[in-house]
Length: 495
Image (cartoon, rainbow, N blue to C red):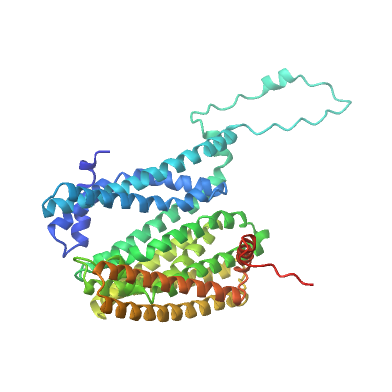
């Protein structure tokens, strides 16, 4: 692929239409990045096929850990940019163009190595399955002839049969045997593909309305990066095994097991997202200050990004729960329902973006709140449709588990707020009295954030175990065994 000839007119149209207030240099950087990242389109199908094949085989380690390659490649790109700037001083526009190119190449590299091991791991399994499907089915033995019937001449019988029709395509026999199954697959695949693209359309809609507010597009990117860094890792570990599990229980006779698996999937989703929200919501401003505030990123930018981060965190539980419910419908061979819900959600998101920006003056926070509200409504509608589709879900029996998680999350938020306030007051007094270097102040601020977050997670885990959440007890039993193994906890013997 020749990068120089890839998508120059569309790239320019996209960036010009979505960045009305951007400078010429910013537009050129975006166009250059789009051209350089276009080869990722060819690698995306290989990654998807590898994910699906490995998940169907019950191997979830590589699909779950593969997103870590993205972080490593982006860090490598940023390191290369700083190394180039240090070794060869460049002018401002040229330096910015090289920085954008480094990030684009890092994004392309992160797709290439992740697709290679997935494709390599998936190829033997796919080849074996194809070879097995190409083999003709075993011919059942002929029933024994009656004693009174004369023997049959096998030569004449075979000669009298009509010759098979010529197959001009080598996979005609395979498609003929699995035509109905392929129809079911494409009935789910095509709407799912369109629904996945709808998410990108929703993101583009937010960026379009963000272009009317100066600095909002960059702030949305910073806040989205902070919330998706932990959420993306956790969602990969949770969602990758769910679809094969749901698919194995899609038969009507396994409906009770499917309902229980859905309950456990939703509970585990809430058990992951609620403590993350409870920890990061009180620490939104300190986290942004520690991670981003330096040089051009001043205190006003910290205030804006932290407010957007708080809005993103409010919608993160419903965002992940919606993905769980979408996979439930895919396992039931129903791709039309998530497609329709996504279509209406995008339309509602566009309307709310317009109202929040142009009519109600909510500012940048309105864009994120609109997305969170649409995701929450989509999750509720999908849950209601699943309730009707599966003959009723025992929601009243599920509520105690969600109640325990909500109470533990509230206590976690209070603990994090109090802990960080005490540590910040103590560190501020110490820094004024001892006259710390500004770099040491940054380390102390980061230590306060980490200590408060650790205290919050410990409180959440302790409360969940103390209130005996059913999904947490097996994990707590394993932890106790490890503690007993290393002598940290002694086994009590009953006389």
